[in-house]
Image (cartoon, rainbow, N blue to C red; front, side):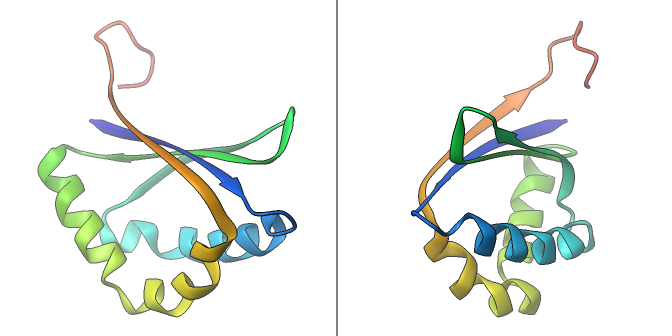
Length: 102
């Protein structure tokens, strides 16, 4: 299993817009092979959103990303969602054998 930890920081006043569009995006992730795992807000930073998604393996990730970002659903929200994000960090992760999340 491959996980992506994604950390976004928003432009001032754009968090509500992002969250509204992200809820739409979440609805069609599974259709394209993207598994939504969880999302968090940082209690110390109002402009930060953290979420985790997963894929069966690296090839599945490549296919899912291509399908998801090439989808008509994504095309309908990307021009509203992307401009809300000031900074994006993405980290790929693989579980260790003793992790409770595989």
